Length: 384
Image (cartoon, rainbow, N blue to C red; front, side, top):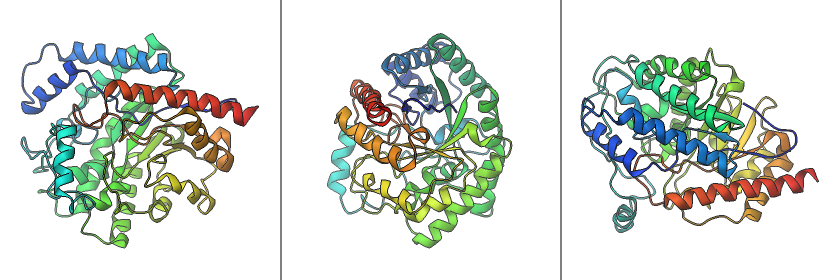
């Protein structure tokens, strides 16, 4: 991953709004994985080229493919791993812990976000990797888009073993430990292929924070911490051949508007997160529940071999942050950790699942523009 000694670079978490044509095709494929969709590859290829070009035009330095080809950042793996059922519900077994007392609010939010398209299928057999064709198509699409748009740097996302286990229930392996280890062994191929193609690898790890009040809400904080450590061990096993400087992880508490009053504190999980063999850490730092946690870095030092990608743009509201606010947020981290060790990012993705969410696509790109301008203003403060 590239860093800079002369300015604050910008990136984001990965997923971006998809076009209506892309959403339509992803929905059709989700309903029937074997449906003949002759226009699928061409539509996705063109959409990736467009979204990479748009990021570069806005001024984003480290770009992604927008996760264009994926129905969601976590459940897409059901089509790349053997052992999963064909059908499953679209909603979790239980509402998020913070949302359970507010059924009226959940109904109102559903009107804004729309229906979830992705299925939460179950593991019903032995897991192996079978998604090489889809992965190779993603890599080819991104290579072509990067060659045409020439960004400063680029990355591609992949789901962590722990987040897959959090979203897709296990009905085959004898224990959670066996399940997450099987996912880890299978996903290693995807991780290594992304880096082998020349892209930085971002592992999405909300299982290290969000899952406390979603999939693992019945655990105590101490039990969740043990579960998180297990997930980190499984992830590190899959990253054995990945140079740490080519890996970044994203940890969040859920990209949705809600009370978030049951989010586990960053200080409780940060020592566990820092054990991941990755050179960069992407964390929420802009929303009202977690913006104050920048101060945690006064107590828990960022290891000298890691950089931070703090979220300085919220991704759950249509407010467009003022560039001066963005610059102020960047400045906190840069002065505390060192300006060369900070790349400005977003709290989460703008399209964590296709066609779902209340952020207007055009406003999402306005927010990215504010991120770029805020980074430029922060650069002026920090270097001049």
